[in-house]
Image (cartoon, rainbow, N blue to C red; front, side, top):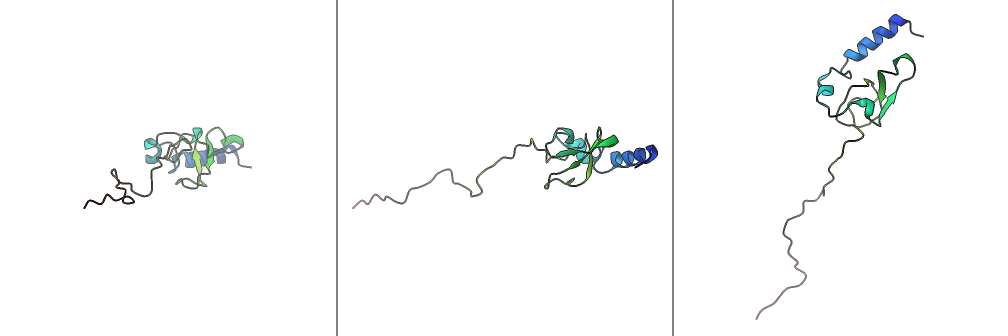
Length: 101
C-alpha cells in the first residue's frame, strides 16, 4: 500500500501529465472525462480525481486520466454519418430512353 507521501507524489505526476487537466488537449476538448461513458473511475484514495480511459480510439486509452481531462473522443460526441459514396445532386435515369424519329 502506498504511503500518504507516495499517493501525493503519484497524484502530482498524473495531474501534471499529458492526461491531466492543464494539458493542451484538455484545454481544447469540448467535454471532460468525468462525464464520459468510457471513463472508469479508480478505487480508493485516487477515485475522486482519477480514472482510466477505456475508449480504444482515444489517445488516452489505457492511461490514468484526471476527471477534468478531455480529448474529444467523448462518449456523447455525435459523429456525422454521411454516405461513403459521393452522390450527385442531379441523377439521370438511363433505363428509359425517349427515342424520337
